[in-house]
Amino acid sequence: MTDPTRRILACAALALCAAAPTFAQSTLDKVKDSGSITLSYREASIPFSYLDDKAQPVGFGVDICDRIVDEVKKATGRADLKVQRQAVTSANRIPLLVNGTIDLECGSTTNNSDRAKQVAFAINYFYTGTRFLVKADSGIKGLADLNNKVLVSTTGTTNFRILRNLITEQKLPIELIGAKDHSESALLVESGRAAAFGMDDILLYGLRASALNPASLAVVGDPIQVEPYAIMLRKDDPAFKKLVDGVLASLIRSGDFEKLYRKWFQSPIPPKGINLNAPMGKELTDNLKALSDKPAT
Image (cartoon, rainbow, N blue to C red):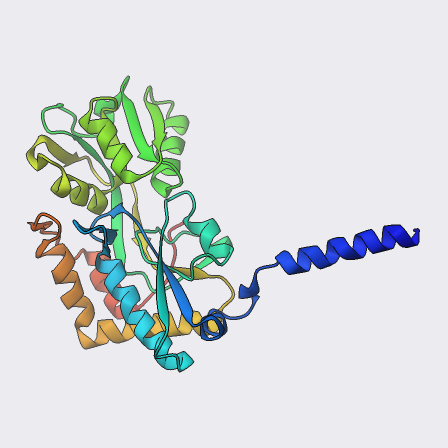
């Protein structure tokens, strides 16, 4: 190998090192050094994380992540910690977490084994099943009524994968298409370009509640698969996971978790003051005792 070649390779190695993300350090060290933490939010994951009528992120997940920030301030000694907020989609939420753009994902992400290869999850804080949003007068009651029709789901979600596998394995005559986010998926149903939107039922209830004419839409079908939601953080960061889990456990033991649940699932919520009237399911009730971060299969 010639000297010029060695110099070129050395420069390339230095460039790669320079491009390497600084978050190889723990999240708490990163936050302490930078003086800021970046929380992600979703624009239409009602009531977990969405934009209100002032275009500000609000929701169940947002409130809990704000409580986590309070604890991060104490742990880092940074009372002046600046909170940045970054919008994410189903498709980019994991890459943006992995590459250090965001530090905590506060939305409606399913905790499953496949994602656990790339990221870590906190204690599960909700459980939901895949069902369908349809026009109320469509006559559609479930999966069997979607033969020879168009079904939409949001790209990058476990729901899209579940529905695609189901259609393929059972050779169902259903055309599955993808949309970039939940709002677009719902719009395809409202405009008649899709017969149904397959997604987590609680998100469908939220989208229905925020529609211009909620009575024109219905959530139908038996749940195809029940899965847990959890706050997402970077993998291999035990100190930060311990802090996040500790905040959730504290909220649960103090009763504040149930208060937040009632605020977002059983009370009028912005922007239209509609009540989702969603009682806490058995799986979640059980996990308030178990405090498990067990993923879906």
